[in-house]
Amino acid sequence: MTTPNTPGSHEEPAPDPGHDAFPPAVLRTAELPAYERGGGASTTPLVTTAVGAQVFLNGITLFAPGAGIPPHTHNCAESVVILDGCAVVDIDGTEHRLNRFDTTYVAAGTPHCFRNASTTETMRILWTYASVEATRTIVETGATARIDAEHAKPARTGNWSRND
Image (cartoon, rainbow, N blue to C red):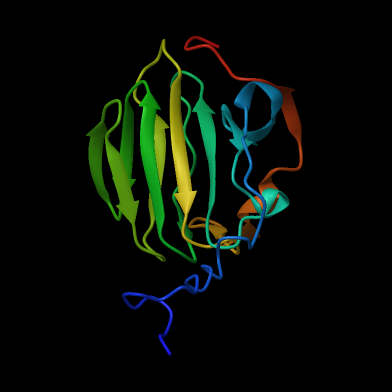
């Protein structure tokens, strides 16, 4: 008798237990709602629990010229990729200038914030949180909310041009 995955075996290997955990999805940003974040930022959630996310969340945030969000922390790691424009990111009191495709990785509990470095062009980021239970805590006030709770006030549907 042979066992699975050995030479000469006629049995199929066991399926990957995560393979069928949720149906695949194709997300088209032009068809998804954007949500006002305040301070000149709008977010389009992409991979969320609503589409079956079990491990991480991600989405796109657009920053108007000069816009930024206040210093905050998360309960999990976060990565941000600059898709368009240039940014200034403050990570634990140290500022860094970022350009297109520059990427950050910030550990849970580390204060940070992003702002659009331009006063004339929009900035667009792709964010990913390492947990579907991700929260944001504003440093100044201590107010904490789930990331998915921020997606409550639709701004508009669709993808934005560089100069929205």
